[in-house]
Image 1 (cartoon, helix red, strand yellow):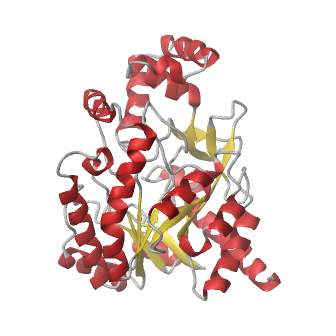
Image 2 (cartoon, rainbow, N blue to C red):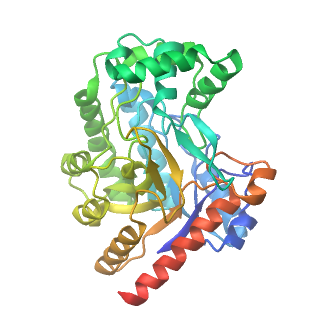
Length: 386
């Protein structure tokens, strides 16, 4: 397995030197400074690639080339954004970068309600609280029809919680949800979010699937010709959110995507944390079903809470993800294909010095270093046994 590390570019507080000392050999990054819909110039790709190479590392995976919102809603003229996306794929291929992670989540990308939830041992982690999400949906966003998406008992608790929040708490929750988490491709003001949300009126899950299929049918042949593996990332959380459909959340969704465009260049980023939030997702079985399409691994674990909808980021080898079974399946896939799979230790707890230094929520140095070391040891042990 190829050990990689997500790096957000020259302004990332975790430096390339830090990453090399952690033992990773590959970098997962993107040209985050470019706006959605822009073609990534080959010169800019080469410059970032050279910066990474000078640190003794390799740009292994792109995460992400953003998919413009006009593509997701099928707006008139969406094809020009898809063609620009495909041109970026060609330019990446010309520089020898052959795996591209992307997502098709409407508007919000990955979503949490707390960026520094304290665990019993004092570590801090990312958390999604279903009641807080309902507070935002019902009382801050005030979305029409939101009541139907929340159980009566959740609405009752959300009302009481909102009534007890001051302006600062409301602003903090709003910013956490809308301002864009690390690597997110969009950020919104509250009014901007409301306006953009209306663009999804009438689309629904089937409309979003149709738009994804049209996008894939346009860009996968380009990726296949260029020799680039496309790897769609699952929804996070893997369920509809604020009235927005989600279509990359479960085994049936992955089956549909694979069938929509049969090329093996139409593949998956298998994120165990995202998919593991749903108890009906059998992760090793899903890996076996799509072994030839799994091009990239995000290895992390989440822990579902008593309500079945809230969750927090667990230790990499704990929580609801059977990481032993997942890594064993990844090693079997590697042996069957005769090629190593890139993986990165996704997210991580803020531990020790992480809490005393400037950091990026979800992407601390020490917490991810611990996760990488644990998965490295697990993989070595399983390799010897297999």
